[in-house]
Image 1 (spheres, rainbow, N blue to C red):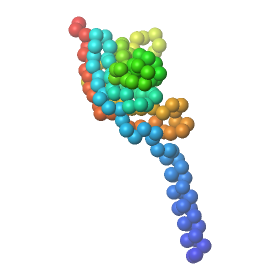
Image 2: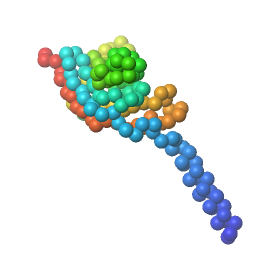
Image 3: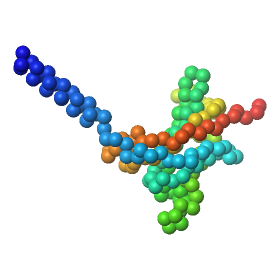
Image 4: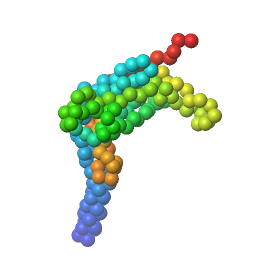
Length: 157
């Protein structure tokens, strides 16, 4: 009986230790980027946010449809001068990412010959900081900004 109790406790400790190890390290960035905004300007969606000192960002966009949700992810690198504009170490402008409206399409039949279908509707966008080079050192479940919405409207016939 005592032997079974000891074996049971060892198994429980081993299971607990393995579940903690499988969970991965905690997110690198627990503070989300602030002042996130998404606006349609001409033929683009312009995403802006305040730089929080992070190296790389991911803007995620979900557009719910009748039977599925179209999801998109766009990554940015702060060292690209078109993303965050600095004068030395002083931020001159908020960070931004410009995505053409033509990027919001959905390949409905996985046929490379037919064109993808444009997606229309209310889009829900958010941004988070990333920790390059990826999941090697930390998982990427970092905090997202508040969600902002924009509407992709079908052109008039």
